[in-house]
Each structure stands twice: as structure tokens, then as C-alpha cells.
Length: 343
Image 1 (spheres, rainbow, N blue to C red):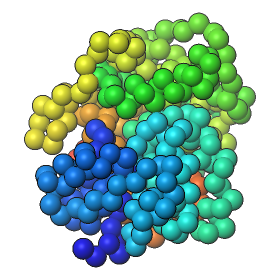
Image 2: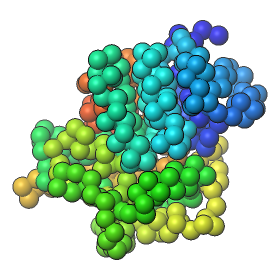
Image 3: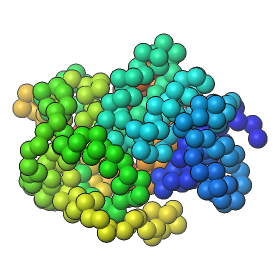
């Protein structure tokens, strides 16, 4: 198999990884599946006869180098990213190929920006962390909503999820983040991340119809607090989560997602509602779709294809909104995502 145009999917055997491989294959992209579990990868190869299998442990740089050899790019969807992010980024930099991941872990994303900016810039290698439902989609919406604005006073990102059945990977990543913060909560205010022990606060959010007014958890902080301020002059980024979804996530007995359609998606629906404010003027951008794990696939695959086609605005470590034309990118996600942007 010619791997010159191949994309390596690290963590291909995971829930999100399977969606990503399916999307690459749907677009006719040569795919290499990699990860830590060789047996699971071989089992998947029986379902996908056109993929190449290259197992690799994250603590084995040589194996990672062999996994990326001759490939065009790598997508890392293997959490927790506190463990996998650094080794796979470093392998991508050694190979000189773009790296894109789907990390929702705040501290892991901070580390990617802090630790690899210089090397990625020197080698002109594109590194895009959090290119997923959390972190990437919100950043694209905020960027598109701001338009020609160079700064804003505050960006609000509200998540209206009908439910949230977490995968095993989501639960593991959440536990890792909880331990790294010593149980504290985090917010982005006054231009920086702040760790605190303030009580959880609920409030109402007026989502666009038909969702309407819903109770949300305020400061349910997601990766947008890393991606948005990485390139936009916004000193305060606030994120919110529908209480139903937050309770699902917190529930130890909440089941994993179950497929209800031919694409393997669950029945979960979402609305991501963004409001940016500058000098008392507000702008809004909204995205709607189905299944937060499944929708990560077109987000990350579209990103990789644009990077390989040279349809980028910068290089080095950059968020989705900095790397791409945000409005054009969002429109390209149809029919998986329906967007409403300011005129």
C-alpha cells in the first residue's frame, strides 16, 4: 500500500477513532490505524480491509516513528492526552508531518501550546490541538462571530446537549484532569486560567428555538478556554453546560453511547450557542447537530485535508480558529453540522 498520502489515526480502536477512520475512508483517504492495542487493531482491520495496521506504544519512540513513516499526517484520538499527546506530537515533529488531536483535556492542550510552539514554528509543522467538538467547534464559532473584530470583552460558549452518555475514554480523561487539578475547578478570566474552589452555580441560558430557555451549569469549563484566547484578544471566556448533560456525565451508572442509525451515531442532539460581546454590542453564532463524538470526525478530517491542501492561515501550534477561515470551515461541515452565523 502506498502511504505517501496516508493519514495515521492513533487510537483508531477507540469510540471516536472509529468514527474518524470511517470518515477518512468515506473521503477516499488512505488510512493507517495505530494505537496501543495490537489485537484490537487487527480485529478492526478485518472490518476495514483497505487499512494498514501499525501498532505503537506511546512510550516507544521507535515504534511511533515506524507508525508515521512515509505518512502525510497523524490524528491523535487516544486519550488521556496527558499521556499520549506529548509522545505523538514529538513523533510528528520528527517525521515533519502535521499533527491534529481531539483532546478535551484543558491541561493537555495548554501543554501542547506551551511545549511545542517553538519547534513547530521552526519546522513549519502544523500542530492543531483540540480539533474536536470541545475546543475546536467553539473556537471556530467564536472566531466567525467576531468577524472583523480584533478584540472582545467576553466570549460565552453554551452547550445545549440533550444528554451525555460518556465513553470510557471520556471518563478516564475526566479523572486524569480532576487529579491534575487536585479536585479544583477552573475558569478563564482576567486573561488567564484561574483554579478555584467556588461552588457550582446554575443559571438559565436562552438557546435559540426550539431548545429555548434551559438551566445550565455556569463555568462548566471546557477546552474553549484554551483555544479561543490562544489567538483572540478576549480576556474572559465562559462556558456553560445543560444540567441534564452534566448530570449524565457525573452519574457513575450512565451507560455509554448506543448507535441508532447506519452511521453509528447515538440519539444525542446538541446546540452550541456562542455570544461574543464588545463595547455593549453582541454577536451570535450557533451550531446544531447529532452526537458529539461522531461530529468530531468531520471536524478533524476536514482540518487535516485543509492542512494538506495548504488551505491554512498560519503554521506551528494553532487552534482551529487561527489555522483556518472559520466561517468557510463551518459551512463545509454540512450536513453534519448546521450553522447560523452573523450576516
